Image (spheres, rainbow, N blue to C red):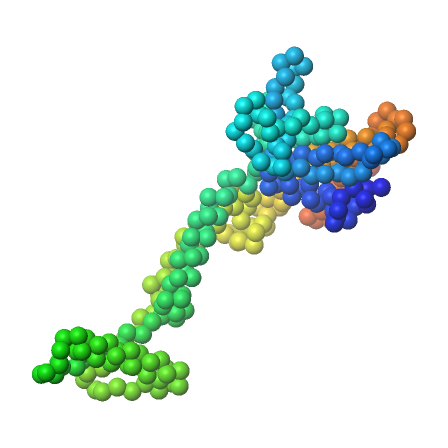
Length: 302
């Protein structure tokens, strides 16, 4: 029945992938388990936008009650008139990175947003330089200024100078495209300014910003294809750390599936005491070592 629980997703795997991405973006997993009209099962598992969820502390019940903004819009109204209560029997909210009893989750990528914005500004600046100066550099051409004629007005003289420079620019561009450039000896000077040499240290700024970006993601730059002196032993430690972080996300998703499966089965009339959802082991870095460890573990059990 899970194949019909989410539109556009391939059963359990597709929904799980969407939930994991939602947790990493919003820091929470809010899911509404929508029952069928005959109350004999689940119609769909609706992933709710975490930004529209608000909680109110109920002193009498000593618990937080969930609310959702109508049409996803939070309005400044008295008594939160645009917030509608959610059914705690069908709505579940799992949060990440919270350090207090408040249910709200904290997006894990929050610290990476500022370096990401800085990187965009840096790329825009480099793009502007490339558009204005070219990839290799720019050519500077200096020529002797024509003399002003005796009966020529100042405005006519300025117009003639501008026209002369525009024509010279066109001819030089055409000459460089053909591989030929001509000029008068003594009154025309060419200089080529290489941009690549003057921009030699710009990569250091990008590296520094990428390290800050990876730090905001709580991830080693090597996992994003950036090798800043990372050794093979260090990669093993980074990979193990990454798997441990993934386990936290898997636990949240598994808890949500357990509640959904239990609700589906109970609505269908099944009676049971426990139900548990487990993820398969994550990819082993070294299959030989993993199998050897399994062999020793089984031998110890025996």
